[in-house]
Length: 293
Ligand SMILES: [Zn+2]
Ligand SMILES: [Zn+2]
Image 1 (cartoon, protein in one colour):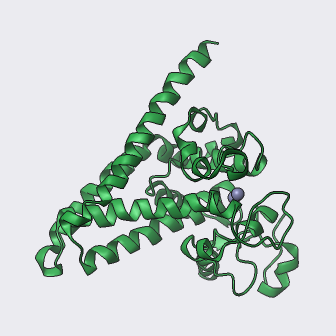
Image 2 (cartoon, rainbow, N blue to C red):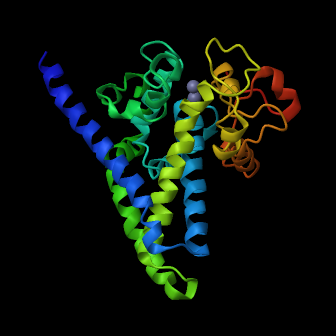
């Protein structure tokens, strides 16, 4: 009982920090009307979307949550670091909720299902509820053996705070020579890039459980959506993913663009990644060695 009474106010304060934080991030994007835009700012914003987005898809999702390929501790840390910079929560929190989504898909317990809770809650409303912070993370205990991952979870707020500071320094340094400024780089390279990446990630939970094709009966309403497939670095092939959750490759057909899989294969080619898991029926096509399990 004592634990319960402590847990609720803690969750409530985190809910408020999410509501205020997300509102501030969205409003800050409007700062572009004041700072204007430049090619330098757009390039940095795009680079930050790719770097941090791929940190989430490769690091948080396919590596930490699903253990779909093997790599060294330093590479795992770098991917988890890139994901932690995406302002989507620390790695242990992210993984716990994601594994829970797979375990309880579209039941009452699945806190971001558009089927049981509606589109708004599936997209981003779920993070504004106590349930998003009462998750005890028992399903991600296997990652506790990595102190560096726990470190990222504990200190991830600092990884948020440092980014606008660095963006301001970068914009000031590039300065008039690149027609930019510190403030412009903060708005584009941090706020707009972050909010854009958020909505792409959120659409995997909302759009990809509602609109798109369903080549597989995965026992839920997950869909393949080409729009999110491209923007989400392969994560939009979500019906494939629910059918084969431990596969490192989500775009299973040659035409299903999967940038994350391209990255994993590239890293495998240079020896930084090994044993990516592929569904049995697709192994021959990729000349892939069967996974160890
Ligand atoms: Zn899903
Ligand atoms: Zn997943």
